[in-house]
Image (tube, rainbow, N blue to C red; front, side, top):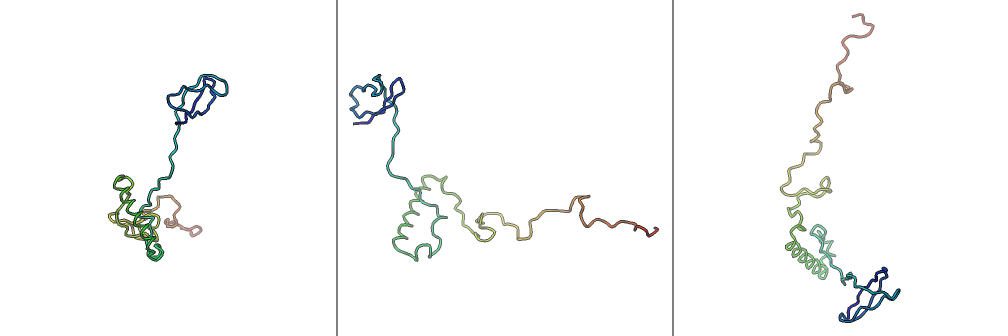
Length: 149
């Protein structure tokens, strides 16, 4: 038997466990006529999204030194992720090989096909200072004070 959520004209809410062909009961609070409300529903369990390859262990040490059960679990997670990405290509992300990921590339790894970054110490396009900016390289005064020229 289904559980029905009911409401009356005064706004009282109640639940009733009854057959779908039975007449609706009166409101338990005021005795008025009731009507069915759309019910919310619950789903048991949880759906887990397999982690992307970037979050999988990258070293032998990360696999608990090759623990057979753990590696099997990782393989199953990788297969599930591959199947998920095949069904939903928008989840695949950037699959180009990573060429550098340490040092200055830690925040944004250098991938195959990216333009080459400027060498350290280069790439500062400051140019000459604007005139009258107070730069120390200004021309020396023409005459000297007190020289009589």
